[in-house]
Amino acid sequence: MESSLYETYLAQLGIGGAHPGGFGFTKQFLEQERLHPHTELLDAGCGTGQTASYIASQYGCKVTVIDHNETMLEKATQRFSRDGLSIHSVQGDVQQLPFEQHSFDFVITESVLIFTSVPQSIKELYRVLKPNGALILLEMTAESPSIGKKLDEFKSFYNIEHIPTEQEWLKLLIDAGFTKSEVRGGESVASALAKATAPSQSIEPMDLNPSKTLHPQLEHIQQKHQLLTMTHAQEIGYRLYRAEKKV
Image (tube, rainbow, N blue to C red):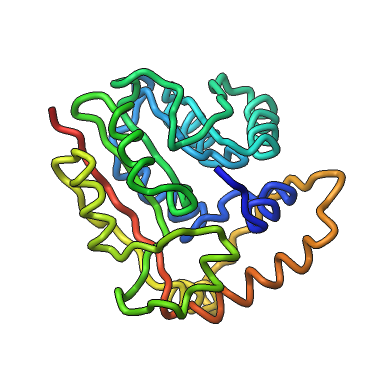
């Protein structure tokens, strides 16, 4: 899986909760799940480990994480060590998971699959889930099927092949074998930004763990990311998808 400039930016600054909705949204949707110490959970594309650390400490789950980015995984394992958590960390590709089928009760992935071959990744997540297991996807979503070439520069910068609409995401889940898939929340980037900048909204502090040596174009990459986000805020959003594997 080829890294994008954006992934370099996230990894070198060690940004946690960079996914749409932020870490606050993650905590909200986890409250709706029945997680407990016997739950075997996979965080696929764990980044710097913010979500995995929270799940292990808050719910006591048996957590495994995987990420293909060496820098991300190093910072995740540093976090787990600092927090005194026993979390199994694996470097690998979500498109070819190095786990046996039926390994996990619950799989979570936050803003990861959009940067991969989505159909292949969803099939892999289905394979490693146990019967009656659940999958949570928090993923970038096109607000309209008619946006077309307007997003060519956006997709090129983030190294994305295609941005599915809500209905396309749901169909991909069903096509992979999930018997039930639904949307549990989400909105456009424009709507999320408006809420985040509202006077009554408290600002969530950034979770950072910067590398000692940074990419020489890091500031440029950050500026480009912010520009593209603002330019396409009406056309791009995020959704929380939940799917179940009934066998």
